[in-house]
Structure formats: structure tokens, C-alpha cells
Length: 431
Image (cartoon, rainbow, N blue to C red; front, side, top):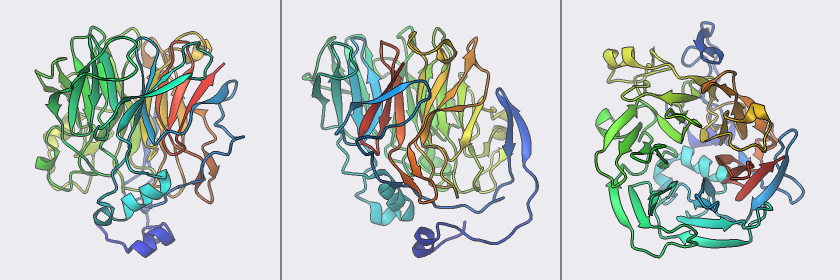
């Protein structure tokens, strides 16, 4: 892999500028239409970070036909959202730890600039909107002293939280505004990771018998050796007490969004694919997960398309690699995932998938920085993603953005909440 000077990277933003002859893109089919896959390095790999300028008081994202208002402000990197069975909103406030930024180089420096990163708050905040008017009356620290928390779950008499290095649970009673009981560590998890792969998400099986945990890769494309990736790039399945761990699905470079489709036992995930193969490789994706299935990383992408950089190739695994369901665009950083709930939104939005795209850094033009919607029918995606919540990009040419959407979830009233971790705001989208 080529090495580039930091001045050149942060000055021009381009890695190389030579003309090259390349084959036309390969057209492959997905559930929602044709996906074009250019050859690796059809364009140079680019570092092009956005610059967060914040939101003026009179500005907000836009969703055509909907009202978008601030639900909560003054947070510190609100990364993920969870609604408890009683309707309280939990906000995981956490971000990349920058203590080792000098060692990690240009990518993390750029990430810090693009996300207005402050020291990680490492807490979960509870917002209560008791009268359901879209304005929380109270805000309390639900749980603090955590280690980059992300996934949250209420199951039975417990509240579960997935730190970057472990899964914990705490005694919980419906309506609790703060956790006072002693926590119990159920499971150690591989800590840290390439770029921003520290997030560990949680979801319970609809029947409550299993919990699923996402663990992103510790590298871009296995460059530290496959031994470094033990229990990584996977969705793990465990019992509610932390026992019985097994790999439910693997070869998922960085699965973050994780949800069961409404009314089904089909698990879906939004996955960040690999970097540094050019502007249009590799598309992030939304896909359903099958027990024991392998989705390609690091050996291949989009099925059997072999990554030329992987030294420890495995042709048999490549043959097993599943083709994802829906392409979400290369380098869009598709992180959040929620399925339409309730009756507030028009019927076409019910049951479909809403995906928070945090936005690109490895592309010549900004991509992502929006929430997209994927229509579903009969439990299957039917059309490519379409923009739903936009306006996060202030000036594409200047790379200025107001914020960056991440976690998404629905309130019991059917309105959509969107966590903007760079703007430090939670937005509410309603009719």
C-alpha cells in the first residue's frame, strides 16, 4: 500500500493524480436493482474530511412533507438512541478516544476535525417527554462512568449496555430515571478498532431468549493478520445471562445498525464496507442475516469480488460469501437502522428501513450526511434507498457540514428521532 505525506493529504486531499486506463464498471444485481462495481483503484483513494460548522438557531435538517425540530440539545456526541418500554429516550453519549491521536495519524486527525470531537462523555442520558408534546420535561444522567457505551437494551428486569470492551447488565425497574444498582459484567468484547469501529450494538430476539451483539473489525482489510480479528467483524449471539456465545453471522466488516424487521424473526444490519479502493468501492449495505452465513470480509466484497490487498486469501470462504440485499453507496458510513413504526408517517414509510449515514471521508465528493429510506413490502426491500432527511451539508465545495446523523429510532407516537453526534442535537421528525 502506498504511503503519503501528511501535508499532501490534508492540503490537496487527493492520493495521487495520475491518469489510468480502467475497465468499465461491472453491473451486478441486488434485490433492489443493479449495482455498479468499478475495478479496484479505478479512481485514486482520497482523504476528504468534512468541516463541522454547527447549526444556526434558525436552521434544521429537511424532510419533505414533515416537520423537523430539536428534541434535545447540549449533548456531547449523542451517538445512539434507545426507547425504553415506558417511552423514555436513552441517549448514548460517546465517541472515539483521541488520547493516541499522534500514533494513529492523518485519518483520526481528520475524523476529529470533522466530528468536533470532545473527550468522550461515556454516559447514558435519559430524556422524558411525559406529556408527549415533543419536548422532554426532564433530563437525567441514567448511567455514567462507562467505556464508550453504544448498544442499550431493556430485557426482563435488567438494563444492558454494550461498552466497547464488555457487555454489562444492571437491575432495572420500569420508570427508573437513573441506575443505582451494581452492574454485572456478562461478556468481554474485543476493544477498540480501525477508524471508528468501537461501537457495539445490541438487540434482543423478539421472544426474548437471545441477545445479539455487533463487533466491528479491528482493521480495514485484515492488514494486521487474521489472528487479530478473533470474534470480530461478526454478530454474536448469547443468552440473556451472557452464556452460550456463538457467532451468528460473520464477514461483516463493521455492522452497526441492528434490528429485527417488524413482525418477523428476520435480523437486519447496516454495514460499513472497506476503504481505500477508490470513490465507488465498496458500497455500504443493508442486508438480512442468516444463521451461520458469511458475508465476505476481508477476503471479498459483494459476494465473490476478491479484494486484491488481502494476503491471507481463502478461496473456499470466498465461494461462501453472500451478496448483500441493498447497496447504500460507497463510504457513506451507514450506521443507524430503524424500521418504520406507528401510524404517524404515511403508509409507504411503514415497515421500511431508515438508515443514518454519518458521511464520507474517503471519497473525492462528500457522500452520505443524510438519513435514507428503503421501501419494504412483505418483509423485503423493494426499491433502492432514497433521501429522507437532508440538509446536513452546508457547502459541498467547501466541505462544510452542519452535523452528522447517526442513530435513528421511533418514538411510541410514530415520530422519528435522529442523533446528530457532530451537531450535539437529537432531532425529531413528525407529521
